[in-house]
Image 1: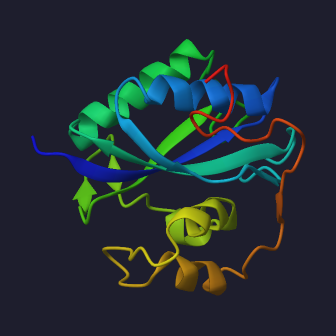
Image 2: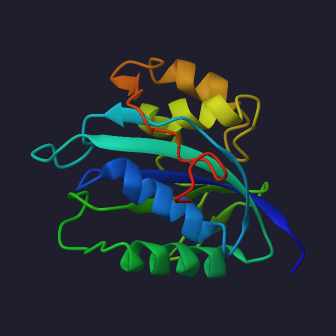
Length: 175
């Protein structure tokens, strides 16, 4: 397979959230070329609300993995970092989602690309807009910036500026 550009959503709301996201990016870098990583953003939980707030980020990777193989690689990273799937939309050490994969539109029982809720979630669109505001949604034909404006912008999503919040490769010796 030829190389593709994929955009991923990252989230964590258990333990040292920033550290889990750093480790996820580092592990991802073993399977794909991490080209860009957004800042971290703190958001209220979506879905099941009785849980801690999330840290969210987005990243762009270049990969030779097929969409399904990339999904499996992300699931292995989640398992390595202690994710347990006990409650739908429940608390988790790390959550890694394929948001977009080139201009691909794919519907399988185990994988839908573009992510089916991408255009509804400010906590995904804000970090994605930081690294790819002009990127077009292959189904909706709108840019990430346009989709973000449609969901009300940055409301409920705040930049998380604690020391050490940067999870980009090469910015922290632990990555």
